[in-house]
Image (cartoon, rainbow, N blue to C red):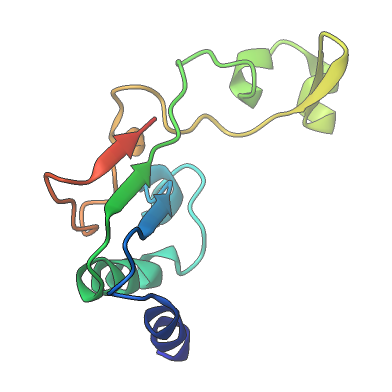
Length: 127
């Protein structure tokens, strides 16, 4: 994969400090049955795993999107608001909030990291 080769070439194994930050590789975003699945997202996971093991990182950080079940950004939270349902936005305070399908609810299957992503005990997981 040319993208992976470029990424690996840019990574300096001899660097004193080098961090890899992997963002939101979670069931709801990656798995084809996830509530906000991205087409072909599973193809990136083996590349991330190879990148994680191909370089001696000072730190590997895995981020996780996480929401309470009735989060203000969920369309389903505003099911009784016809304007929000039609427009996909809701005025919250002084700003407009884009509304999303329910996703990455705390303690749900969709919030979990995608099972094929290799997670090491030394990885830092940030919600």
